[in-house]
Amino acid sequence: AQKVTQAQTEISVVEKEDVTLDCVYETRDTTYYLFWYKQPPSGELVFLIRRNSFDEQNEISGRYSWNFQKSTSSFNFTITASQVVDSAVYFCALKGNQGGKLIFGQGTELSVKP
Amino acid sequence: NAGVTQTPKFRVLKTGQSMTLLCAQDMNHEYMYWYRQDPGLGLRLIHYSVGEGTTAKGEVPDGYNVSRLKKQNFLLGLESAAPSQTSVYFCASSYSIGVSETQYFGPGTRLLVL
Image (cartoon, rainbow over all chains, first blue to last red; front, side, top):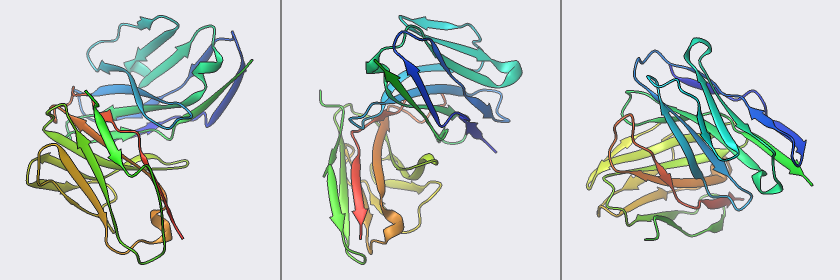
């Protein structure tokens, strides 16, 4: 069975703090992809990043970085120097070899206060 | 290029009423999906389509029907709405069903069933 767990339901930080959103996954597939999506207060789902199971290099994009560790089945997301505009619900998702099904975690609601 | 659009944005139904949610994409994507988002559960796949004229069940298909008469459109129907179907519905599309393919989401439809 495939499963994604985001144990942090809500996180609240003050602007300029760094924050890490945790994502732990379960799969028996040897080839799979991991995704992060952002859902701002306006409600739409915005694709942020995807990472394949064979590439454990960390990814950095501006203030965003992702740490993929196969040994711990984790794909954590860090926002450096958080801003109020980062306030959103963030979803981690997994896709294996099961017909395109995207398995989502429960989401982490991040609140960045000025 | 509008991407994925959904109609309507918000709807209130009474128990037992029927309605159809429309999803349209202009990216010439072959695959389309319907998800529902509920608090604490993330997004769950209702139905999906691998091409014009074909549909398949997802994780939570009961109470819903779908049709894909045109490649660019994917309809989600509720024949007899129930309060348990109060949710936010998202449509998504992707170029292929491969494990590496990113799904792009519409803005969502908020449905309240009284």
